[in-house]
Image 1 (cartoon, rainbow, N blue to C red):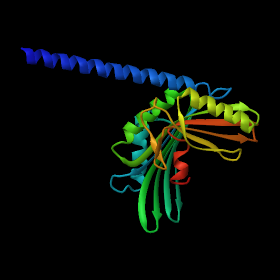
Image 2 (image 1 turned 120 degrees about the horizontal axis):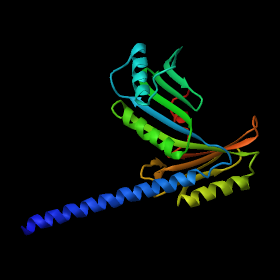
Image 3 (image 1 turned 135 degrees about the vertical axis):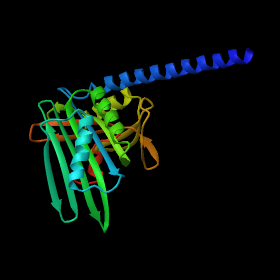
Image 4 (image 1 turned 120 degrees about the vertical axis):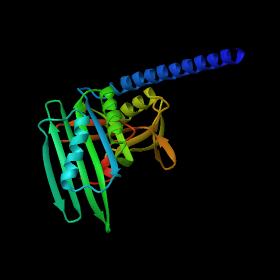
Length: 250
């Protein structure tokens, strides 16, 4: 009887601990969303990026489209999809694009021959009107859909905000420092120059992370000025901005 009571007590303590962890995780997610919501002066754009090596058997062109349509359906994308194919000397790409009034989704299946070794990749980009909660939810959904098919994968949830005019270096630093302080984040690496402004940081509020020169990071802030519309764009991401730009070029 004593052993049974001990087991029941242990089980109740475990349930309580799990509940406290879940509650703490939800509170941290709310804090993260609140900080990201302050980026920029105008309506924000959410963006989700995924990159992964396709690990199943080799897919021909028709099967590539079927596979992308399967992933698109899992994301709720079923109608008005444009399919394009591009062939280069050492590269083939099948692309599905769905563009609406509030969102744009691009799913790409790439076959590349690099020095005689053929590999296949999946790159997915989704942009939408919304906040970090929406972007993070899409990221988790996308990771779940791709888990059986991808390896060496990376994904990110991004918020893009903007400020009117060209922010000076001091103004950029003020935005970045406020973001990092509000996220309880320490700087892992940084390049604070007008031509290349990017900072990698680590916050205990976010559980997942990537590695940079032996150190973990899970938040990234980058800025650039667009002369076309006279705005300074601020990109904040978990864990990093622009994953596919350092892997397979478009």
